[in-house]
Length: 502
Ligand SMILES: *Cc1c(COP(=O)(O)O)cnc(C)c1O
Image 1 (cartoon, protein in one colour):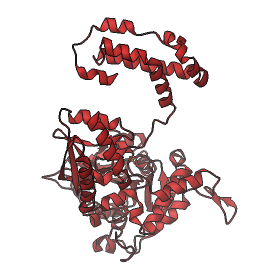
Image 2: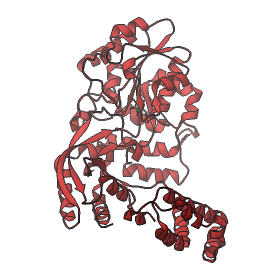
Image 3: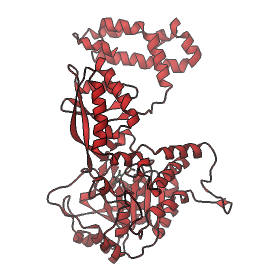
Image 4: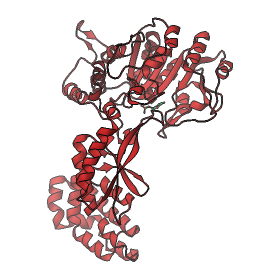
């Protein structure tokens, strides 16, 4: 139907076309659908007929069909209905090829899971497990102890050098270490996502009181995570200090009053304030919090468990950096830089974590065994320093040379196609609330096709199986193989060949 629109003829007399459409009942009574209805049931087929007819109606309204293409569509109606029924019986959630170069793309499912995590999900999901059962005592256990033991090892504030190999855990400054000698063990609990972690922390620490936050940190993430709204739901009052671009320690200090319960620091995830800016250093905030006997919480968002400077990204603090600097509670996501399943972590001193656990919100926000299974396997990969086992981390570690080599191979194959293909330098984006400037040098495939707009090409690629998602820039499609699994290079090439000849 859609392809018939390419002729771009004069808009047809729509009323006449609408009149040609049969009613749902007429279609259902047709002899051709009897067998399908027998097999799949009246309701399923009726839904499919509704969908097909409404698509035709919308094609008419947008001038996508004329009299002759409508004839063709109507004569193939039974086939289209059968196709629609088959489609409705497949999952609508499906894999695709992410060629955007955005590693943690929220719309595309953020972190792809390590295969060990998927194996563990299978293993635990298919049978009973000791989720909340202590095999030693035979008594009830806690579901979070499975991952807490690993976080304890990964987040040892006093861990010395040599704690890791190729990608060292983030190191704190000597200054921060001196400020907090031999800190107590760090505990971690897990909730549904980082938004839930922030909600739980604010509600536990600041319900009925005030939390002080800098105006420059009132972030909105993906249009749905707004600190002020989470604050309201947690029954904590937001006390904004400073201005958007400048907040001084004295601003926090002045705002502290008898009702203050918490100092809150929020990572400026997806925006950057440049130019005339000022923000207290973390260690200054820590000292202020200690002096005034208030807890300091940091919503880190992405929360890396490895040193990002090892992949050339500077100034992006890791979870351990914050804890070592003396932050009392750190919240972060499981499916951003950590590279695991969707989850929200709260890491901090055992006393504060115990209070979070005792909050009935924790029960409402808890995660299921599949999340624990995937998270534990991901953390084990960190424990073994097996960073390449974590796809998101592996993608960050890919060198431009490796990507370039693969891009050249794809470009060579495409020489036989009708597409014009060029290689160019560009940047991959870490995404997922890492600093907006967190980019990695890459090599892009720039693809164009004579007579077809980049947007039309992009639409055809989205209709491929599996769908391919690329960036559109300057009238071309840009493909970044950093986020394409090497085993998908062939499928990507095939999809490009196909759309070139469509
Ligand atoms: C991403 C992000 C959140 C929300 O985390 P989810 O895991 O998506 O709920 C909250 N705060 C910051 C700073 C973030 O970057």
